[in-house]
Length: 561
Image 1 (spheres, rainbow, N blue to C red):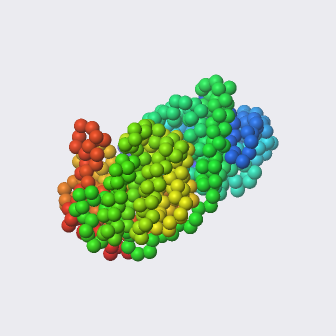
Image 2 (tube, helix red, strand yellow):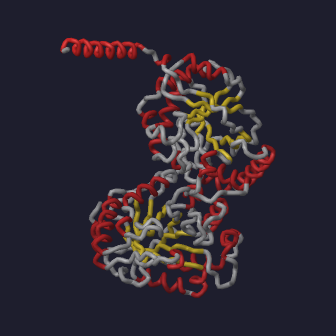
Image 3 (cartoon, one colour):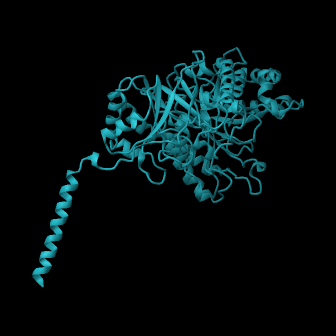
């Protein structure tokens, strides 16, 4: 009995060893490949936009391939043979070509080189073809949905993987053209991999991912939608391939594209020279950041550590003389001033809904003239911040949810209104720092500082102070979004609610973060409750802090550099 058991065990071990031997002998070509031509894919090119070139009439063939890690050169050639020769051939590569849930480490695998052999074999086969070849890798990465495994990933991870693929592809096939395949959704710039390996950008009208997205309101006007997508690419200086998902009348699409291009060219003076000019070198602040407050109840302004005060100024403030009074109070304390200009609430009954058009049409010139006249005589530095938080897709302010090109035109009009070029006046562009901010970038020639807002409470659905985000988390996210502008930051609004001990801890951590970032020129605490009308049926958050808590924060920050 014992002998038979030994024989059975020995036989089992031998069987396992034989299987392992044959498994090791298997070539990758013997393993079934998941590569396939995506027969459901249909995204024709309806046009190419390039600012300094007239409409291009190239005819593109466009196919999509799903590729996995396995290398089977004969099968790669078989797949490519299914794609007809074309003068201009775009191949969209889906790597891996599976859904979000089944490939959670897709970008990591690419970065680790797991696909290198496949990329090399594929590009080696591809370069034998005639015509011009364009590779568009893992597209629509910026759309916040979970359709593809490379979506809903950190931008830095996608960028690293994209550049890994593009660099390797070009090393094998130098003539290949690399297409950065954004959908053109708000926030696409966060996934911009840099110009080194990119030859073209692309945007997609009504792509599969975007039809599932709910983060931003859908743009129903086809012409406006195409125009916005094209203009989101303006920072990159690359020709833009305009694709559509195959839904809709192609003649209507091309007509809408022509109109969108015409409008973009019309506004080019406000969009492209200021977008494509080489940014000046960013000047980091040396020494302690400027410390300020928005403190209408004057609870903190007398701190010896405060160097700047914040005012929000609407048209009525200027018309009644209240602005002049408030500004004089600040300068009498020898403080600098942040002036957030809100072009609305007009005593002259000019419609708030037209504020941006009113700006560029000179309707508010008397008020602007008065603002500049009052600040011209001050020896204190004045930080002018115009029509802030414009990028948030809501209607809290009359300049939100508007045409970005019109906003840019209005911003530039205001900042260039005073021709005296007073060195004490600094120009501040003030997005909230939310997704898609750079669509409203007005150009480096009218911006000295970028301001962002950092509040611990992210939205009205969270009422527990302990669930607030840390200053560092919010800062890192928003500062990253500003990276293409290369300007110093000014945190002109920030605050935290909750019990005093919680506020103290949050602010001390904030001081440490700010102190470690010399690109932050200054900060200004919002020492008041928010507008109750914005928060519906729940109490508006009160960001106010005690004198002791603020002083503790300010002292920690003053000692941080």
